[in-house]
Length: 316
Image (cartoon, rainbow, N blue to C red; front, side):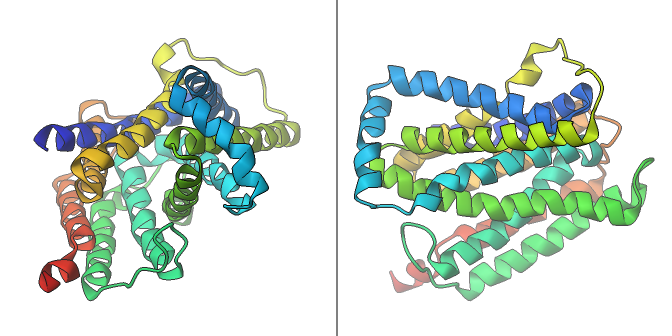
């Protein structure tokens, strides 16, 4: 159990590292949309190879035509990858401006709000879920904690951004978090129908890659940027692979240590990994103070309140 929790925390930190790498890649290349395509496309290629080599991947791909033919799942579930593509665009656009900690905090806020909407509307495979007062209370606590944690970043301001622009930049990861919960729910439907998360993750990356080809192409046609500056640091191109590790670890660990512990471990890794990155390897946008740390820890408390099954415990 302890090993699984530790692994989930490490997997969660992969998303924080991915955000830093993708943000740096976008800034270095001078084209955040092309950077998002490169990151996502590499992940798609790795998944395609894995799906061919792994028996579970081949079985899931073989089931896919029958699933589509019998309409066991809605066709728009395959658009979930577009939301994943948006998350990577948000990373390449804003991480270098906000810092990893603020980006991840905004993402967690969006996931908390989106999770409530997904359960309330019954988008996930489990159908409509009631919203307990503890979950609402925990979400309010998360919002308050994140607001506190972001105070130092807004107080410091930015050399190139006004306060309204900074608020707009923070809104991008918040929206990404909301869309991520819908993406997760739709991917869960595909995984259940095909019998493996490998196929759902591959369709996710394939749809996202197609969307990013269109977005990056239109953006370059409209803006006419100069030559692309390809960075020489190979690790900046591993963002897509880190995303695969994050998704795969969540799917595998949930079966061994449970969804509750896995979810808490992943988000804990995201938050703590972002803090460690900003403290150990700061950038020009990094603003980490004791208030930031306190707000991040309070966010974790809110997540515990949201996630724990208070009602089921009381009935048992």
